[in-house]
Image (spheres, rainbow, N blue to C red):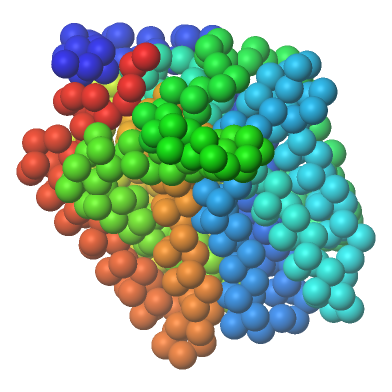
Length: 461
């Protein structure tokens, strides 16, 4: 039986709350901020800028495909996982050096966006937004590995909750903060301000401690597949053999390891990962245009959607962390999946009512509370699936799958709204959450939906 299972069986409500006192758990607040800040700046905040600049809803929807960068980070995750950066690795360590490099890329991209104008050079905006998204996705790879490696598995749900808290604080700054700046000084000044805010992440990376993980420089030499390859390829050049051996150990082994540990259930787990966030991501692309079309001002959106919504999400994440620590992962995961899908129906009601601030407050409260709970449970779920030998690569696989299909579908959101209207769109986005609910139920019935709650999904070495 895993240590995580034993921990959960013995934990009381008071102990479940006390996990938030861990120093590593508290430290994730600032790193979460650095991860969350760039996200809206290439999604809904950018959508608002583009909407005010006169772009069509269909064009804004296609712009969201920049976010697919987050979904294909698995292709360079093995590099982030295994390759040390010259000079920086010796100074900061593997995880922190990659985070610092990525943060510099985000700052450059945001400054580039601030210097362009959608009315004259939308292509330039797109290119710099792509740089921000690529750098942000790279930061996520290193940060996810840092988070999982920094503390024992029993605290991962609390780590996820404080990470979400910091992440949502970053969203608050890049959402409400950017809206306030744009209202008084214009969008270019807003993006320059966001670039300055990324310095919080830079300072944090310089302060925090690198995870105490023993790394063997030639770890791939221990892989059975690598050993067999080296034994059978003695006739090849050393450069080719070492390069291929590295590829097998860094890329092939993380995938085969996951399937070996989970068997047939691996396919259902991957399918769940792929569909879990379809409902909220599909809806999220059109949220900002929806608010504006309903007649809400930028200040009203900032006050309710960003500021008030932030605290509701923080509360949902905290509740999710406690529920996971107390009851395990699957039951809170099911609750989050149901709540996330059902909350979209409230948007359909708001679409029928028009400009109504009390209803907007209710909708935002339900959406953010359910989103925070679902996300903290889901992050803990993904973390429990990783093997410590391949943390960054395997988590990147999961998080890439988590957003790939949702972002592809989200690109057509504007077309659905233009063709059928907002009420139909929000009902449609609710229906897209049903497969995730059914898959969680199926995995729960198998008795080991998260094998980390039973035996050995996460290597404890």
